[in-house]
Length: 317
Figure 1 (tube, helix red, strand yellow):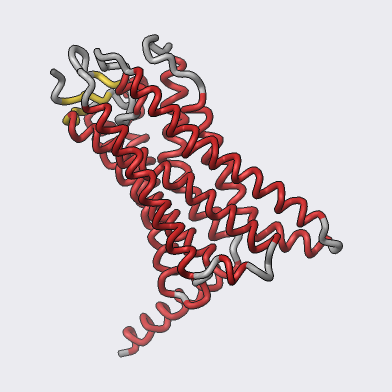
Figure 2 (spheres, rainbow, N blue to C red):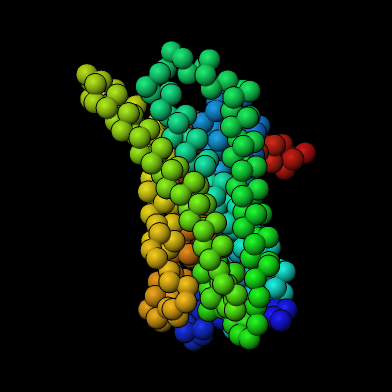
């Protein structure tokens, strides 16, 4: 029985591992700092207490958990040109990564629904999206993925893993993990199909339906400035949805054929797309939501001025 896994990481890039290590370390620190800054601003500023910012703070929390689950161990693998991880640690890493990734899908859906209500039903928005409603929605957004993924993990733990323990990846992704199993993975495959349909396809369809309604409402606005102002309230979310679901579709929606060993170009493509949504997107989201949001920029400038004033007082003292 396999008791530990060996992650190859980026073995084909050993000659530039040090450069990649520094790049990913900077990206990780910037990701955690940017998302924690968003969470702090939203939780402490009275002007950022709307449901949209509440959902955004939870999205940032998802990004922090996701990137912290994967990147530190990936940095260790880069530093040592591959590294071991216990089988239990591998399972826990996959559970946290898949649960937070699924929670992010649901949060993006909630944010699309929030924009739909704000643009298409502005008069009823406050009564529908009240504090109790948003708290209940976010609670279910966290509870459902972690519960569903726990059921999948229990099924995976009942599989037999004998023989090879080498995973050609930088973290314990599902497809390369199942390829090492010597058991029949039919039940796991059925659970995966259900999860993909429920947490992936249905959420994406709901987002598309919401934006069809949003665009139809925007086109009815007579003035061009009014259309641009209304669209600007959801442009950041739309960009985030395209980036996240696009990379997810490329990685997981293509049939994997578990019993067939993927080709080397296929493995490299999977690593690249996985790297994009686990490292690049958590880094880009704070930039996307901050640079195009006047309220957040004003709030950041306000706190920055307060910090400068306090520092100047300390220097004078």
